[in-house]
Length: 368
Ligand SMILES: Cc1ncc(COP(=O)(O)O)c(C=O)c1O
Image (cartoon, rainbow, N blue to C red):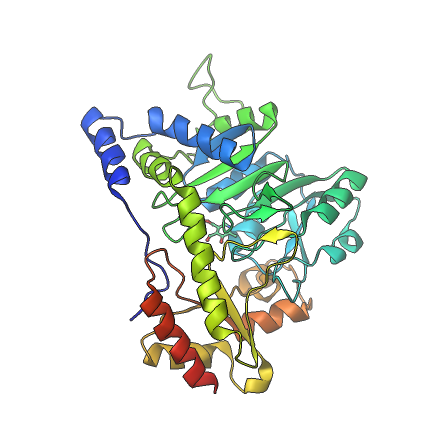
């Protein structure tokens, strides 16, 4: 089987991890956590970085910074991972959804303003599968209504919007460093911000809201979202060669596009003129006219040795939220179509050109 993802680990990761193990700095104290935070923030063009245990924790902590009151609303795409919506729900708020752009699969920014109410506190754009969200209209709406932007940049390490790095465009931005991400720490995440107040709050929230003066006296509830020095060591080693990793991802994306662009009925990832797509995962959407949905397509690819993953299923189609009385009767036609017709092909760092050829031959055979 050709796997959907396989990370590339170099000698440098081994060297840094060994340093942690030999020195005994294996929990969340140690030089690698601080360096990883500083260097990742600098890479993305933000002032402060707060490393956390995963991307879901990053979103949870970021939303906690909003101090939501029951019923306060956060606008986000329906087409995303549940981590986004659950962060709002766990913080007592209500996720308010918009549909996807049919070309980029990111949130349709033209639908945001009509969803704003007196309860709206924030907008959460999520860059999807390597392609940036169109951020300028979001900033315009956010400024007009005094809203915070929490940017979910988990899937777009190194991607650019009008020449600026994704994850450097919101008021707070969130990352995942799970093993399938462009740079990884195994499990891990980070929150970035230019605000000293948010940074301080995030550091406190991450570490059980211990206080400097009287450690075990608490005035607020926090989380244990600490990243270990061992994980940060892997991340720092990866970050040292991020330019090469991003270029490698783009090369994989271009190789797929060259080999698949002549197949009718198969939509490939786009790259808007204002965007640098990093093709985190190479998604494809089958035209309904092919008579096949993504489940059937995935089955046929699997019989030819190609592993795939389905696209996200919209938040408005989740039983867990219906049980809470959320999103009932809501429809988002683009997200619904791409959820049923979309999947992503093997896209890992370790993918070879021969494997890409084999995947594309399989796709050609199945669709033709
Ligand atoms: C857009 C997005 N946000 C958040 C997350 C959550 O990250 P984690 O798996 O590290 O909790 C993911 C995970 O892949 C993601 O794709």
